[in-house]
Image (cartoon, rainbow, N blue to C red):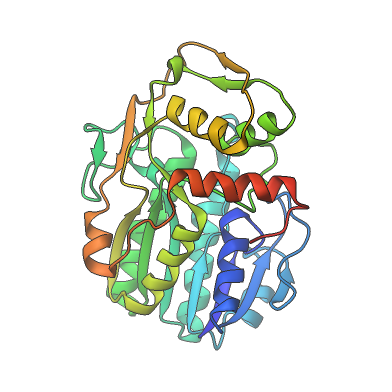
Length: 308
């Protein structure tokens, strides 16, 4: 397939790009390197340095593609609360510009990287795709807002789309700046013998999924999905933050300094994906266990930042 990956220099995007190339697909990446913390991508891809807000870039590089993997987004929740407008502009309106370019050039399939943030404060601890969507921050709102647009572009213009709602993705290649995600913060702290920060005594149960499982879901969606579809992409199993810290201690083989910061408002006690739909429709389920995924992640941060 001829693939366009927007945000292909980011954490998930860089892993997806390598995976697609390794599978024999032709890949073009569009990325402006604004938040990935990375300055280069796999040398086997065609790299376009710029934004999907640029009409000239879209006009030149969307045409003739078989599928678009849309990962480009502004993604730090705290910043979305401080300054919402750029999030709506980039995550929603630039997504519409991309869809318009696809419509113009007859590109008929898009795989969209959405977020579990679309659900907001869930009513149940295990979340199904059809559960209420009530985002509680601008980031979650912008990720959800593009989904009805994808539905409309399918029903009116025949552009097939799949929205993959990611839970907590971790693994090699995460160079987010500033670092906000727990596992890369913890791994870097453990390597330097610095404290690992916990909240709620580590009792919170969250859903973690390894990045290689996520990129596999993307390609399966491109190969199998038709029409408009939505899937949760998570581990499907609750992991307490304390268990993750204990597993990290076991894998890294050293004593960890754990600092409990107590309560933090706005954190749900349990947040786990129901993955029965994607398991049934795409024959996908997570393959990488937590200890194995942490091992790969530690190796990445210890070995010159090369994707496995």
